[in-house]
Length: 226
Image (cartoon, rainbow, N blue to C red; front, side, top):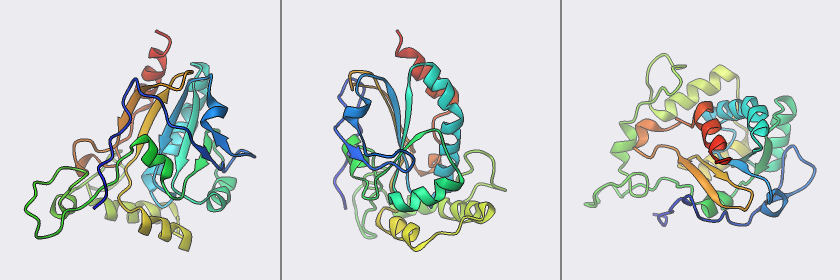
């Protein structure tokens, strides 16, 4: 059982960080980004097909966000060497940072699931003290891409096979170390203050892999001007 992590809320300051980049030549830090607004999204590793898809969506949205004065940053739970190989073949305009230990995910308070022991009498509280039964009953089909709503693990396997994505030993190790990491989006203003937050699956495991839409992210960016 891990400690409960509270996501940063609007009005709080973003924590300092410094992470290696998969598509920049240097380490990128909060100090590098200070003075300009940025949207930062924290993902699972490349083993997650839903995360790979949303990274593609962010890449397509990046010109519109930049036109709104907002930089786009993604943090993935994959070692930088592995990420560089993958994104050499699938480049993205998004500033792509790597955090194989999820240290920055934790600093921003992006939750990861913890499961109660099988014989526990505690009331489940998703995702901090979830029941395995609650997770096993989950069925998802967030973009209608699946033939039917499937358990999240079955959905991952099907989409990875569809993509021809074969997990490497590195991917399997990341998944083994961080199997229940959730996804979070934070919009940070030029002064380093959080202005908008979106955390995956707030309502329970049936809303896993549902991420902010392009319209929601652009609307949040537009509100920075007011």
